Length: 351
Image (tube, rainbow, N blue to C red; front, side):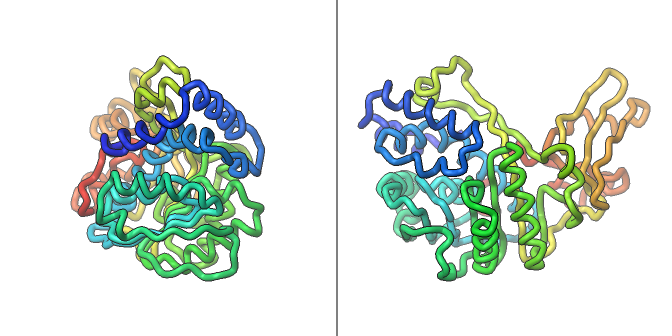
């Protein structure tokens, strides 16, 4: 959930627009995001639309990026991340999320819509003076030819799905070249978002990047012809979020597809696999769908009689890591990798 200071900052900014107008703008955005409109970002062109996005879309995207930063931090025992390149920054969502996991002292935020920057500055100020003082903003097309300055971490959040394939590929390549340590790309967990992730993953592999997550391999995706790889997380709604969305539940489910790449190999068990579907927990066994280190999609059945593995399988979650029995028995071999990406709590500011 968003830190209280950010919730308050959103509340204060959204107060400038009557709640019914925010609700109408949010409903329109929901239509665009659920459809196949490739130019949806161009539709956020009014104060009401921006503030509706801030109140309704910023919290779930923040939580997803925070989870991915937390996973990156877990996969490396000592990872120094002090600067972030936030591409398609909007209200500074990715920078704010990275700040929750790393000691971010400088950030470059780029968006083609410079109208976001006033909102972003106020959000960064709510997160901390040091972060706000180290932020630089640039208005411009993400497909511009100029190289990005080096940063420890590059993040492209909910942006490449709005670009054509060639432009998205160029952006991923330029962003990777600027990333000194790691890169995170995330898109909605839809077939379209997954397709954007597949293309980005191919570019990163071509650039000799280490694929950290979710894939435990660099082979072609085994789901590409029949399904799509995505995950989900439960997002706690703020009171303002609930009013704008007109929902009664205190939470919503955000589905996402992502790829994390890094310069160095992660500290992870060699035979670890990713749980790519919600585990089916039966009375006498657990069924796990896995993406394995060999590049295959595999379904395994863990029977109750295998007591140790069964206990681990009962605790397993969609998006988590599943290890072979001998690896799981050796906790010194990256025990932290057992934590599922979608179930992490907030990490301290030192990874």
